[in-house]
Image (tube, rainbow, N blue to C red; front, top):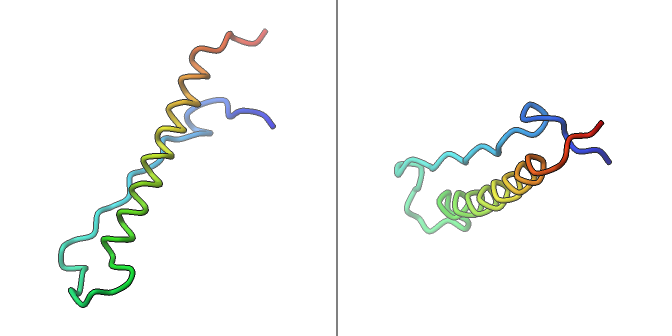
Length: 65
């Protein structure tokens, strides 16, 4: 498996959009739109950490000849 060559091949993960307060109906739904957002945000935070590690590794790698 080869590594992507640049940012176009491995874009930074996009942050999920926080729901508007009016998107919650207030009826205690399981899951609530805010529960779903919290899960998506945790996954995004991990994806950003992984992305940063890949790009840090790539920046520190010696150029291939």
